[in-house]
Length: 458
Image (cartoon, rainbow, N blue to C red):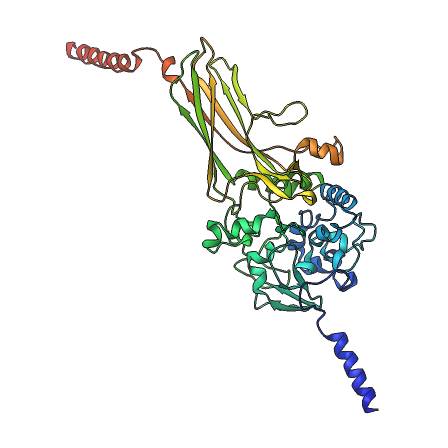
């Protein structure tokens, strides 16, 4: 009888102890039914936070057709070696539940299809590193978060310092090649080595508050029955992805992404020398990263494209110089400077397939609070009409149009965002009437004198 009681107690302890592994949670370690559904459970009390998350790229991480097309191609070309490697960030519950592979989503439970969701983030109890999704999950009914005084009738709560740090975001926003260690996404590292980290500014301060390029308090409640707080972290999770948020139907998140891009940089046109017909004319354009705590652009930077579209027109409105225009197929002028990363395969050839990457051919981007200056020059046409106007527009898109055409078809048009611009006009002074600046005051003085003289005669 005594041994039976011990056996029952032992089984009780086994069944009720936290479900956790000593290192990162492995593939198939858990079951998807151990996680709670955002719609049927979380949004009941956290309606506003759920509304912010729904439609975000976190919520659509596993449904993003661009990601799915790339992951399927990678799976085919590597005989499945990349399956859980990529999916661990895009459907973490799907991976730890053993529902991946396959990567086509045919074996995923409904909860695993919901990407980076509430009960993933709030069951993270540990991270053994800040790259390649090295997280430990403990779905034991306790929700971890940034408050040390939370109380809920629906679940236990626990304060987690990890949730307040950039290292929490770095679990998925730093990605290294699993074989050769080549950095493929380095958003966390870019922040860590930059000026914002030195000031103690975390990822959450920009991406989980109403502030676009810095912390802004968001007073409110975490739930309908919760108390008022000086700040509630928002869950829009917006970066620069206008392309897929718009395609997948969230105008709110797409508009927020546009606004974030438009607050990230500053452009200045700097003319050099005077305008002389038939002579060389030069000018510089300076781009400054004024709002991003990481490089511009960041993320999968072999796909991201940022560039200057520069136009020079004469006084008649005739275009006399252009750099950075898109052709009829959506390709950037080959003479333009594109801010992105170029990866190389084992033979040293450029590749956009991250699973083939062996080295980095070039990495031309702008670090936080850093700048880059482009120099432009052309021969001024004979008998050019003044004034000369220079306009430089900084543009961005998530991927080259031809790359998307190949993966998804031509019906997917990649939106181009105008981040910021600057204009300068040169030669205005030559259009003024000679002597006008002197003649006008003299004429005014003569009129006043005539008025006084006529008054004295009376």
